[in-house]
Image 1 (tube, rainbow, N blue to C red):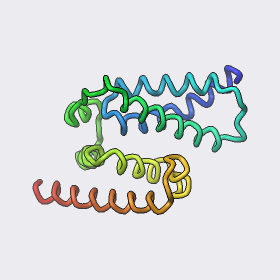
Image 2 (image 1 turned 45 degrees about the vertical axis):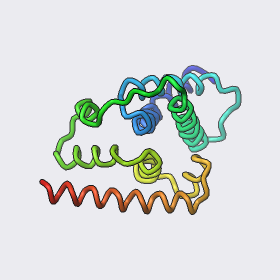
Image 3 (image 1 turned 90 degrees about the vertical axis):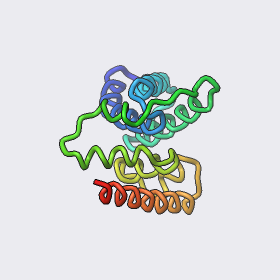
Length: 160
């Protein structure tokens, strides 16, 4: 891959890679490390990509796989609390912060499908392919994630 093409793709997709990795790891340093790992894989990929969508989906798949592999490794037992994580971001409105913390408190399998569906505009079919799931499993996870998010947000609203 030519250097100029790599820089263009890296700048275009680094935030997406970071957000996916942050959803898996729950902390900024690990997410930043994952961005670097994924971009190194992008730079060294031997085959050409068909188009920008092909690159995007390839990057999502590589990010998800590397995150899962990293989390499975035995030395990965330390987690950062959501309070520490929320301090790493600034939100214009308190509701945005509440939504972020609520989404981050969901189980990983729900966070990932919500992120890909709502923030990356992936279809259910695309998510199924990227996560190596059946479309029905993705639909179920989305439904359960929405329900859990709704319940959590209702509790936050009632408590606050």
